[in-house]
Length: 284
Image 1 (cartoon, one colour):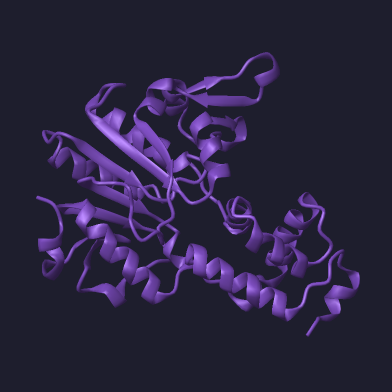
Image 2 (cartoon, helix red, strand yellow):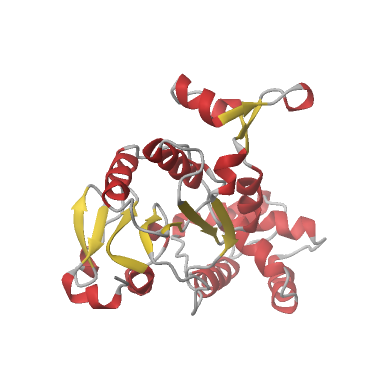
């Protein structure tokens, strides 16, 4: 049944269309959308209709079913990518303290599982440079995301200057290069930071992850809020074999894993370690 809003919309958008989009996104990306996201779904998917010269959502869903290469754009259009440098700053001190305890290990592998436009993995890299006192620390960061558009931006490492204006002056001087002429008003992260990071597309719902670890730390922040509890549990369980037994998992400020106490135990504010019943699944 269509709503009154459809009378002023460019494209007819029914409850059936919304339910179909919601189911497809859940089936392919594990993301659960509430009823409150109806307008967001319309505005995001409507762009795909225009891009493909289609006139109805029904047409688009048929088109999507017939064109495998459109799935990437469909999922990209519906993922939200809000991030900033050193977001939830207390995590980075805990992260540094943890790596300091194991800094003699080799390799030191870290995973940022929702890299978005790159602010988080670059913040992790800066933290490691400070910890080791070198622009070439013995650390490798794997940065993954389901959204290929934001990964391309992350790999470029170029940001508008207002994205870093709240960072300390010393941090700005040591880790960012100012753009000139046509790049004025932009900044680029130092190449040494980019060399520490491998960016790769990955869907956390994929049956197999082409990664091995062992990871000293995994950042999976502000991602689980998009998944229902069974999906969260499935992903959390898959994290464990990629981690060191004493590794840490960093979650978002509004996320808690009370439903997975057999897998992870709380160590600090939204910081988790592997619970005893699951330690045998992790790497030494």
